[in-house]
Amino acid sequence: MAAEDAFAYALSSNQAWAGYKGHQNPDFFPKLASGQSPAILWLGCSDSRCPETTILGLQPGDVFVHRNIANIISPTDINTSAVIEYAVTHLKVKHVVLCGHSSCGGAAAALSDVRVGGVLDTWLVPLKAIRNANKEELSSITDDKLRGVRIAELNVEAGINVLMANPAVQDAIAERGLQVHGTFFDIGSGRIRDLGLGTKGGHNGIPGLNGDAGDVVRGKHAMLVFRTDGAGSMQAR
Image 1 (cartoon, rainbow, N blue to C red):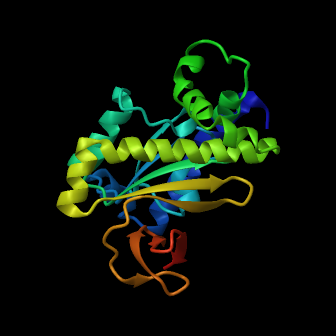
Image 2 (image 1 turned 90 degrees about the vertical axis):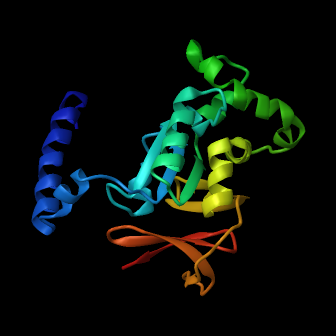
């Protein structure tokens, strides 16, 4: 497809999608327009290969979203903080999911000694700091792709630490059992891996695919299961 045709195709595709959804369920869009009550706040990377609702198998209205370059969670970023506060305090989401991913350009840039230029160098300072703090471990990884994966995992860990120190998140954990998850999306397989970071709290006893109890977030056509063994799974309904 020619680049100049991409937007026209997107608009045409939207018309087809809206028509299909409306025919499939006439109440879908009216109900969607009446308000939102998402169960998940998703904090992810802006990378075009990581569309949260798609990779979770969920639907519009299921996921409240904030994405930025390299999914960096900074306590001084008012944009990120505003999204977290609104989702946790006002929408009262049940889960906060921070997700890194493989083949991350931000991770590769942080590992390089070459500057990207402009505001991006400033934005990537936290990732550069993670690189410096874990220099010995990262230097011992000879494979570039695996080194990129590792710094991306460390970035999720750093972000989870920021989230767990956020006052709104702390209050919601104490008052209503909010759960915080650190995860990693492998673009090459399409699968999300739970890194076992964040909270370990209240599960409701609904079995996962392997029979373990897990906390379930129900979408329109599927349910995402966070299991106690640190894995996530999807069950069709």
